[in-house]
Image (cartoon, rainbow, N blue to C red; front, side, top):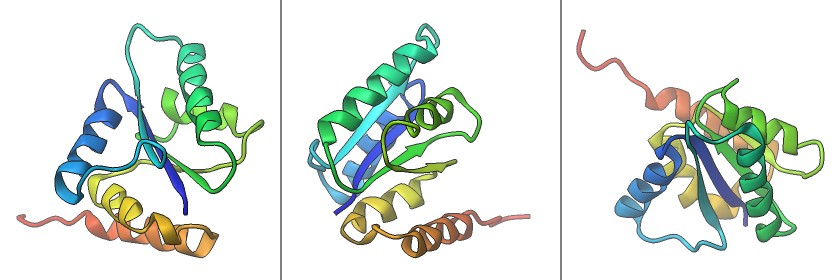
Length: 129
């Protein structure tokens, strides 16, 4: 089973997890966690929060979802990836988070993560032109 950390600017990660739980039910804090990043926080503060969560999850498959590629949450995860082993997905959306949380028992190899990436891209649709 993969454990999941959602990290993002402001309360985005926390609210994304709240929304996921509203749709599919409460998630165990030992399996899914959210980390906020506030304007008053330094990158070191964010790295510390993420490090604490990674360490509390312990060994095993871990996927970190960051809100924006190149943003501070993504950069914090990339910095920690030198010491800790986890997969990093940047640019999450709600359908991807829902699918990941629902499928966390089966997200343990590169092929499954690539399918999740495709799913996320396909979730974005122009509905009215």
